[in-house]
Amino acid sequence: MAKRSIEGCRGILTGASSGIGRALAVELVRRGARLVLVARRAERLDDLANSLADATGKVEVLAGDVTTSEVRRAAIERAATAFGGLDLLVNNAGGGAMGGFAEASAERLRRVMELNFFAPAELIRVALPLLKAGRKPLVVNVGSILGHRGIPLCAEYCASKFALQGLSESLRAEFAPLGIDLLVVSPATTQTEFFEQAIDAAETPWSRIRGVTPAVVARQTVTAIRRGRHEIVISPSGKLMVWMNRLMPRVMDSILARHA
Ligand SMILES: NC(=O)c1ccc[n+]([C@@H]2O[C@H](COP(=O)([O-])OP(=O)(O)OC[C@H]3O[C@@H](n4cnc5c(N)ncnc54)[C@H](OP(=O)(O)O)[C@@H]3O)[C@@H](O)[C@H]2O)c1
Image 1 (cartoon, rainbow, N blue to C red):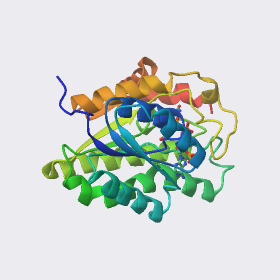
Image 2 (cartoon, rainbow, N blue to C red):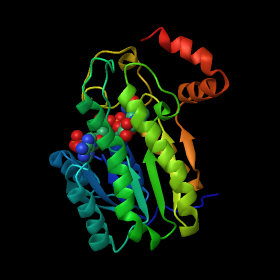
Image 3 (spheres, rainbow, N blue to C red):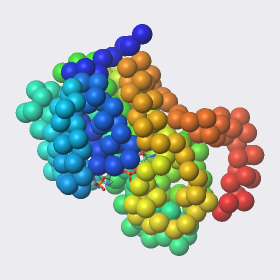
Image 4 (cartoon, protein in one colour):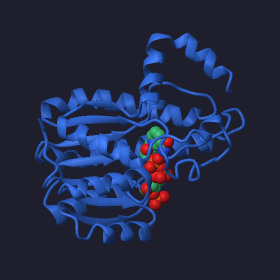
């Protein structure tokens, strides 16, 4: 039984120009959502908007960098002016950095945290007044299985997703009295531009894992939104990793140390 309807839902979706975000836009708009689509590559967003022109829902395009406060505020203003409010905020924009921590710069850590942690955190903050007035309001944070278990050669990324996971658990409790729900989606490896677009794209054992399609992540996310779930881990391998780590953290430590 659905707890939340996508039909007529007014949302903001970051990172809509490729991968999981693009697939989520297709799935949500097909079911009647109205979305502000945010990413830096304007032409990609325009192509997506054109391809969705005949879908049930409607889209607004906002090209910009979510790590800037101006773009975050512009996204909120666009939802207010175009749709008259906000029911759904999907923090999906994100990116990784591959390679050893010891060889990396302090700047790499800051860039990863800006994109994967500070940007979603601050977008939630500016969205709050509209969300409070929304219909069955929900924040969806796209985390990662690497927000449940750290692995070598992706330390900054894992740290950023752990931070997002912690923030999400705190805010879920804080926002409950306001009637705002919070879902964390934790994908495992997904076939997107993630590895090509990484801040540092060093070859790692993880870059060669094929993973699921973004459409699988999008479908499971939309089902979780409709059913009022709080946490989902995508794919059997992702679930196995999270559970193995909970039950046998020392075994995971020694398996992962072999890949360092
Ligand atoms: N693929 C995986 O294996 C995997 C696994 C677990 C979790 N995830 C998470 O899934 C989410 C989506 O990633 P993906 O796999 O779909 O990768 P992707 O294909 O590279 O998509 C990343 C999206 O984020 C946008 N983006 C990046 N930096 C941005 C910025 N500064 N401002 C605005 N938008 C920005 C990109 O658009 P522009 O470049 O046009 O700005 C793009 O639309 C991320 O949070 C990622 O951490 C991915």
